[in-house]
Every structure is written in C-alpha cells, then in structure tokens.
Amino acid sequence: TTSTTMQLALGDALAIALLEKKGFSAKDFSIFHPGGKLGAMLKLVREVMHTGDELPLTGPSSSMSETLLIMSQKSLGSVGIVDEAGRLIGMITDGDIRRNSGAEGLLTKTAGDIMNRTPKTVAPSMLASEAVKLLNEKKITSLFVVEDGRPVGLVHIPDFLRAGVI
Figure 1: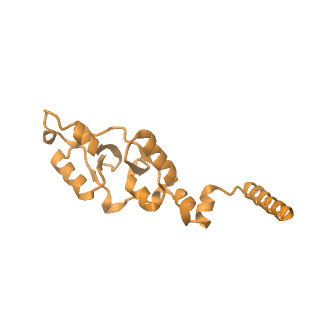
Figure 2: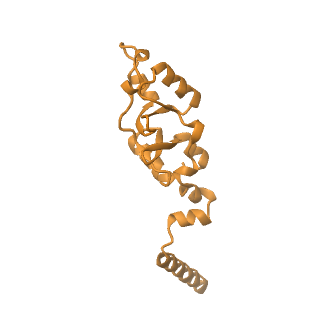
Figure 3: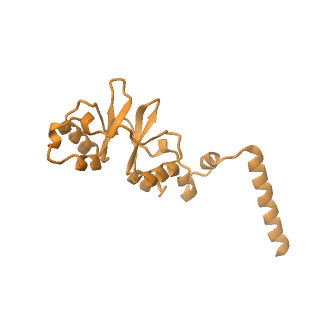
C-alpha cells in the first residue's frame, strides 16, 4: 500500500507541476469542469446576471412614482439611473426608498434626488464568487454589471443562490 500511495503522490505532484508550467488557471478549470460546487464557484458574473429588458433602468429626472413602478415591475430590489448616453450615474435600492420616505414626501422627489451617486459595480468577466464576496463586504444585495460605464446586467443575491455559488 505504501508504493501505491507514493505513486498517487508522485502523479499529483507531476500534474500540479504541469498545470503551473502551462499557466492553467481557475478560469481554465471552470471551462473543463463546469459542474459541481467548484464549477459553480468559478462561474463568471455574465453567466448569472439579468440582462436586456430585465434591467431596471430610468433617468435622473424620472418621478419617484415612475421609479417605484419600474422597481416593482422588475422585482430586483433596485433601479439603475442612467444619463442620456446610457452611462450608469446612480442607483436606488429598497433601502434608499426607506431612508428617504420621511416628512418631505418621497413622491415629490425625482430619481436623481435620492440616488446613490457611487453605486458598487462589477465587470461581467469577474468571478461570481468574487462578486458575492463584494456583496458581503459592503452589506448590499445587488450590483450593476457595467462595461465602459454602461449597465449590461444586474446581479442579485438570489441569482447566486440559484447558480449554486452560495
């Protein structure tokens, strides 16, 4: 049994040395082994994000009535605020709505009045597990996915649960 154990250890050592020499990465592993928990941890944000018509987007001059309607229709707990060129300039979450529903009257404001002007964003090529780590660190539930400053997707905690990332 000692010789078989040594052969296994030698085989593993050779395999690791070859992987390191070839520059085999976690992303490469996810291509060849997409199933299981490890494969799920190596998914990219683009594989789990909401896109296209699913994205809750509006402009800064939108009334809060319009903004709330978009948030309710899309059911993702947030809405992205974009400028005329389609660049993400802010974000409103359910928490922002609660914090701004005081005496002044939420419905008298615009999306631009209450938006978070520095929303946390990620790239579509980021590992989904890294996006989850960011969500946990910042204690938030969703992130806009941007390319060249424009929103191309949105990820939300339940998306990662469905994908098996968490």
